[in-house]
Length: 294
Image (cartoon, rainbow, N blue to C red; front, side):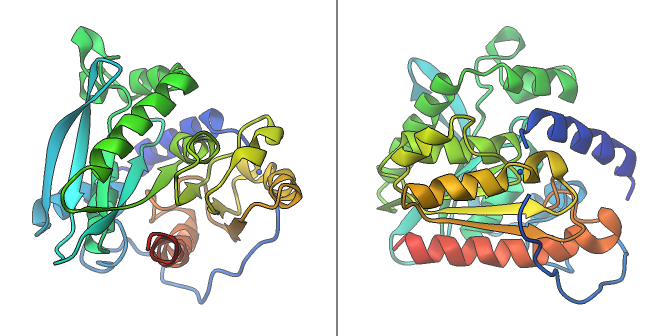
């Protein structure tokens, strides 16, 4: 709760940065006490932002930073390996408009806990002061501005490099998906358009590409997860659904009543609705990935 003011500011920035979506509302289950959950209360969910560092420090899984070269630039990439005997599918985690954060790293760790090799690139690598990445920016607002200015073609090339790197790992099997949040959610959808060999795309509170005709190129099934109190994003769901249906594509949108933009990161917000949304959306995410990454 100590970061409530800061989180509210970040959510406002995220809403401005992520384009719009409306559709049916799904019930979000029984009411929960509007109290702040401790990091241990929901071990099967990614943590809230304020608990991310603690979760990372306690993780039993092997996580490390590696450099993945994309078009001559080293991309600082967080990778976490699952604890399993057989080869694992790959999930590329696409960060929010804030850049690579401890929270995104904790999401990758939770995906590894579910059995996936999770890779989370810093798409601001080489864009910061002194050629640094997200950590090189003086403020989060500066990082937001930099992410907003990234060229889509360069982002796609960087994601291709990271995906290829991960799939070439000895412990990986040839199956891959993306999971993205806010700006990263929109990027996850755009990557499904650009990468025909992708096996699945999960979009958290992000939009489809503005030119809906490009959705004809999508090969992977798409899962969309949205907050019911996120009108700017929700306003585009219906048109996206119609276009995906027109082109015979798989698109499964879910809107969680009362939840706001960024609900998986800000689980203590919206008087409990964000947590209730997270409790439904994350199991849907894991089930979707297991279904399509075989």
